[in-house]
Image (cartoon, rainbow, N blue to C red; front, side, top):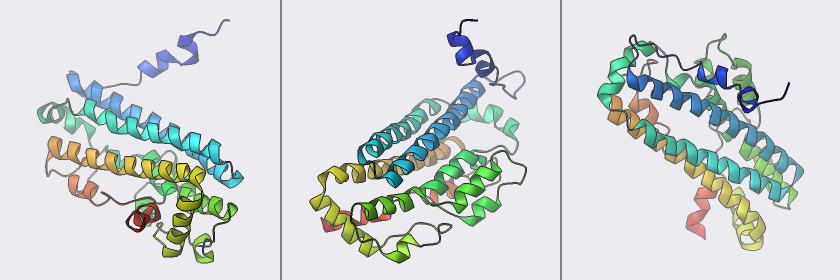
Length: 260
């Protein structure tokens, strides 16, 4: 049988998974579902690309890594842009079906938690909040216990002759990534002596900035939609989201800006 577009992309199954809980269905609930399902697909693609970026760093393949980071950056920009579509939904439209979500909440997105962990935002309490029977539980545990993208980046820097402190290379990878002045010294040297590697540094900064921008847009979306209400998953809603605002994943790349 000839493979068709419909079969290859499993269009039938794809279009069957948008199931509104409101009865009769509220018009904007379909938008809400599609946006969040699309987010999960982009999270999957971002993580898929991060696998490749990390391997490129391990292999010392600069330009393949840059190309992959560029794609990750564009995925992050797409995540931010999708907020524009969701903001066409008014607070009253959301309220019309919000109670149907019960305890379902974006706070429970395991893929986003994996994404955070792999970028370096490690928090044991977030792992503890995920029930044992949740799909991808094993994957989020593995991400928590594994080296981060920045750890792989440090290995790459060693490979090009940078003097990265041993305590940085041997750090506890279950702890959040923090700044290090000696690493910053080496990054400054790279900026001055290796313009080719500088392309990678700027791509990493772009991705970091994109994640911070997505967090900000997410906070403002929640604020304009639910105000100070408690989140559907029982979190503090907007106040919970604000706690991670403007926290860099690559603090050393930001710290050196004042020294250039």
